[in-house]
Amino acid sequence: MNDASNIPASEAPRPATARAGSPLSGTMAVPGDKSISHRALMLGALGVGTTRVEGLLEGEDIHATAGALRAMGVPVTREALGRWHVEGVGVAGLSAPDDVIDLGNSGTSARLLCGLLAGHGFAAILTGDDSLRKRPMNRVIEPLTRMGARFETRPGGRMPVTVTGTDTPLPIEYELPVPSAQVKSAVLLAGLHAPGRTTVIEPVATRDHTERMLSHMGAEIEITDSPAGKRITITGQPELSPTSIVVPSDPSSAAFPAVAACIVPGSEVVLRGIGMNPARIGVFTSLGEMGADITYENERDEGGEPVTDMIIRAGALTGITVPAGRAPSMIDEYPVLAMAAACAEGITVFEGVGELRVKESDRLAAIEAGLTACGVTVEAEENRVTIHGCGGPPPGGARIAANLDHRIAMSYLVLGLAARNPVEIDDIRPVETSFPGFAESMRALGAQITEGGDS
Ligand code: S3P
Image (cartoon, rainbow, N blue to C red; front, side, top):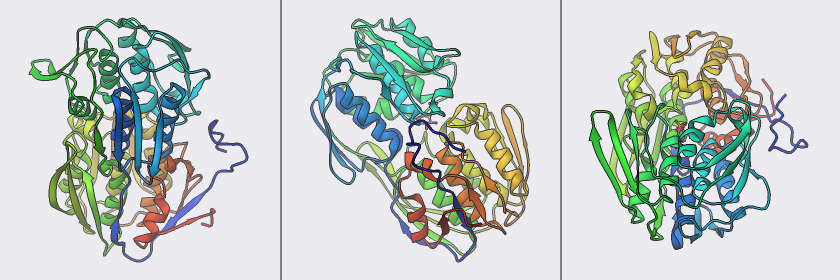
């Protein structure tokens, strides 16, 4: 039984079932990028004047960020689908919220807001749903404490967290102990408020949307290579210029219809305007190595981010080893790639994937338990997964617990479209965090996804 604290008790879990049917075909409009959407609202809030956003993801996670900013005095307005504007209050211009801020399922909102709040001399309390309240916050608390902010949490650095920031944060130099764009961004956002230069060193590159957007808004960002890794330095207390932001379609969301098109025989699916930031596209590199038939067309630049159209056709896949160094560029895509691996010929190994244990759910456990229930042989170790591909459709015929994890829910629905027997998930509601209308969009391609638990 799912008892997410941010979902009203009256709203019952909604099971959904995917089953094999005809090939998938057509063009799907993939929603806006979740990472870029969060940053568009947060950085827009720190500009002086109006930032206009096109293509904003209207998922629950982004509504959580919008709600938090409104609670701190920032007018955030929806004009039409995907078209929003933010009346920026300037760097250090947020005001103290008069209630607890509930961020639902959104780890990105929580970590990045801790960075923003570290540079404001007031206290705020952040909480979230059952999933978010289990996730580690010490990874941001540690550097932000060095910058002068104070934090009180439940044991183990778990939320709810009270953040007491300072009007005069200290600039620091910080080497990331885990490759995390959220931690990097939290330190850079706190550094935005500090007098002087704050540097983050990342031994392994992570998504760089924060740096790109900050420099687009006129902040002084310096990026250099060093023996320890990439050094990103921000000069604090700039005046950020409001801007127009066009949000590309999310490559992480595109991975679901892309894998579905690969594994449902006879399929051909077109996805347009997909973000191709090099720090985000490891899943497509991996699918290519597995032999997937993906054509990229019309590669272009939109609003400072590379985008492309993709045509994906079904075909035989072969198992591969995904190296640890690729993990940051596909950290959210392992669950759906695991579904492709289950259908591939031969063995697929994911190396260096320990971070998957601290996502919206323990995703290594979810891959192991779910695929095993679907008749696939899987071994999950602390930091590595081995999947023995079925060389075609796996047996399926299982009911999977989504555990408040949107990507686990969508991954098993994708598998159900290819499996020999239907695959049911216990609750489809979490997909609204990142991919509103996922089931409808898939059905428009011909996918057999029904809601109501009829398998
Ligand atoms: C995100 C970074 C990643 C990713 C998350 C979004 C971001 O998390 O898993 O969905 O927008 O910065 P980590 O920074 O924890 O790897």
